[in-house]
Image 1: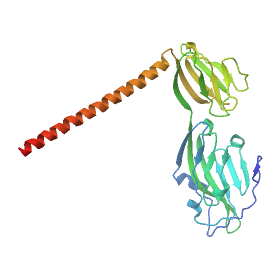
Image 2: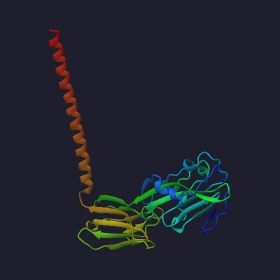
Image 3: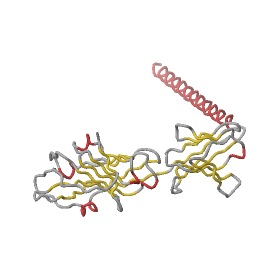
Image 4: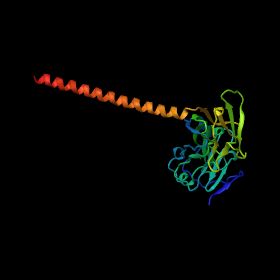
Length: 280
């Protein structure tokens, strides 16, 4: 069973023995190319890392991996013992079964806007004099973006507003003819007649839309950062318009197919006439 330690602890020297001399390479990070990873709020991000790129094919009976940002240690693992900072608690991991083979990639689940930044990985190993050495492995720049969409509904239809993450705490609304934002929903609120939280999924359901519901809906996290933005239009002919556009696209495709067939028949006729004239 894995042991997850929620308070900071001090690591004893590891039993990772290396052949040769290693220097503290934290100063080498500035000269190493940084990788870039992008994701959207609520999804998973994997920050690539391979300690064999620095340490080579050395057999390590136990490994001590550390992932940091510019201001904090995000994750640290020594054997089966793991530590993670409060902001990332329950969201980060380096699979132990992969770490032994050289893969020290950091998995971040349910990524948030605030997770954006530069991350660096290090291996802590013992040198020949039993001195713990912090060896820089990889630098990764993570960029997390919010969700944006335009949606159209007819009056009387429902809008399913995706919250994307358990960190969504508030939904605000700005009417199409207003410059003011109003709070539509807050986490922990009881369901109203028209606004209901899905009992299982991270979704908010706005029932029986009216024309006055058109506008902009924003989902915000605990820090007021935008998780998603939905621009909603509510019009009588929205469903018919979508059907009409689909039909127009089909007609255009059929016309194009007919034109191509006509062109091929015309070209075939020219070739046949040419062959007849050549035989004469």
